[in-house]
Length: 119
Image 1: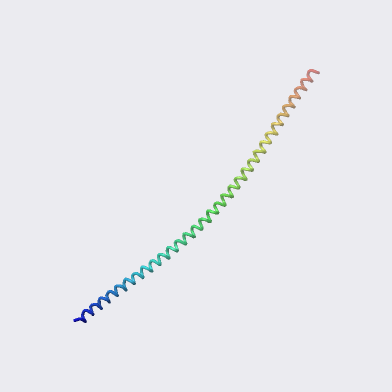
Image 2: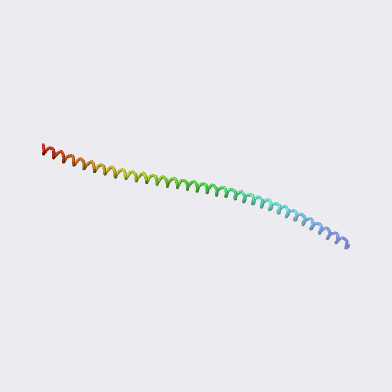
């Protein structure tokens, strides 16, 4: 009879509906999993950003330290140059003294010769 076909169609629809419900539930689970993964990714990204910021700060500190070192080195170089200049001036003064002493010695020897000739 015709009622049998209707019952069969109704049963088929019920089966299809239950399959759809299962598929919908699976989709909801997948969507929730995706949301969790996305949250984890966001957290990882923020952690990376934090690490990068720390690295940038460390790099800036290093640059500052390097700059300070460079300044200290330049000051040392300047002091060394000044010392070299002072040393050179002293050497010049010493050479002048030596010349004066040599001249004095010559004068003294000349005087000695004069004295011996006059004696």
